[in-house]
Length: 344
Image (cartoon, rainbow, N blue to C red; front, top):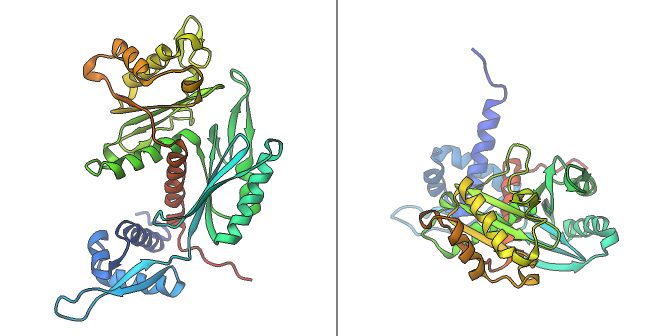
């Protein structure tokens, strides 16, 4: 019989992550509430809470209302630990947000950067944020297919180069780091904002295609059953390569009838993943003066009514982007907690 080495330690790490997840979801909780939510014994919860309180990861809050005996202690995540920084570059600006584990925003803004030194500027800015906000993890959104600590940039059909900004930033900051495709993060962030505004939906019910079209290329982030669809090699959602007929791809399609081509792309995506919502965004819509009704009319001609998804514009690309990045970075960090301080 094979034995898994370190199994007790693995179970402990999983239980600790469950406690973090519970306190993120509930805000505060007693030992009994944590035990009920995680299906752990009260004894196990007590032992792990004592350890996490000693480490400063969790702090005692108010006493709960008594049900006849001793008033139980409530616990919350430490407000001064495990903050995450998420950021992305867009032309000559760097957008960023600093979050607590529970999603509370401590700071959100943008700073000007020089396009010629954008990556170096981003690394320097992240280093300053690490010290200023006591950041424990970094999330970076990138406009390409993520590969290890970099992302692929398309220099023409089949010609790819890798941008290693992730490697540069991780080397400079020495923190856990998440690198994520921009539209994957945007699509996930849109879904999380949507269920916040429509509480009748759960994340597991979200089936969304977020299509973004700009002056250079087109792409999409696809959510199926609440999860990002990445594909085997990470190229899931690369709509710019979608054939439009006549030897053209979506990126090459004429701007004269762009609404028709967008609807054709929606029809293709709909046949594969059948989303309930299709979100259409990007500066090409403004440049070509495309109205949402135009896209809907063309889509109705190409998609049977019973299969037709709702098609809409997003409220805020930036907010969706930072929300998705924040969530993914926090989920990346949780299994690593508590992070032990390195010896001086």
